[in-house]
Length: 325
Image (cartoon, rainbow, N blue to C red; front, side, top):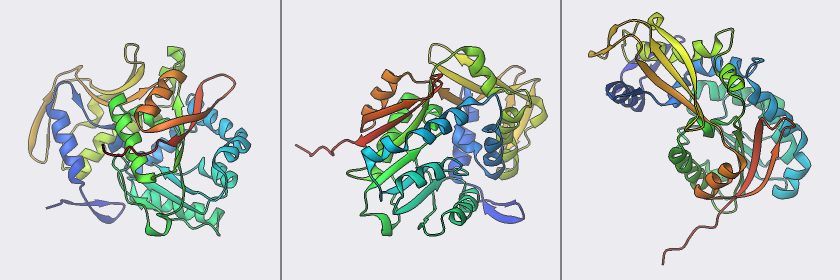
């Protein structure tokens, strides 16, 4: 039975997958919780605030790229496809693509339902003649798209370097799921962050105003609210570190003292200095990015970077389905 919760005055149900990931993640060593659970309504709002920070270069770099590549994108994909955006969030970059490719319809997909519907309503006001079909769901698995767009050619859109939040194996699985959702003849426009000096990377994930720290700790607030947790949130500090061996930024929540807490009556204890690993952000060079795309069922056809080579946007086409022998 799902547990009822109250959020913004509305009755909600605790997600059983969230419960399972939290309980299993805190029981293992080292402790870790998947980054996808950052994005309740408050987490989504905080992430949008992060993208406006001067330290956070990916949004500015990717937006600049998208503003310049429309003629080349059109040359490859044409007009009139259905744009399917994975993890749409507030859809702030989406208008750039929609004005470029003049889609037949737009399908935003996000795990945060309320945030998704709010964003879809805002976008509908900007594009009143565009059919918009928001789809709440976990795009880590292949999803059935709305029937009214099922037979049309698709252009997947996955901006923001979210692919970097996953291990390479998970990223490959996600790309395969996207391939399954979008079908034959689909294309994919995807952003990937690049490796760069460590000080630039760490500042982007540990900003001076502390917005990313609040975003990280909001996960603990969500656990307390939705899973009847007693975690002392003030006893944890945000930490961002560069792991050179794995070419990734890691975010952790580090206990500043010994803590004891419960989640739905299950007891946990953490020693001072122990951490909960909450996010990875892998950085891909062009060669590794192309290898990843091919492993996930996509053939790269074009790529674009900003002048400082901070960020790259790739366009790929779905590999033909293999017939069983």
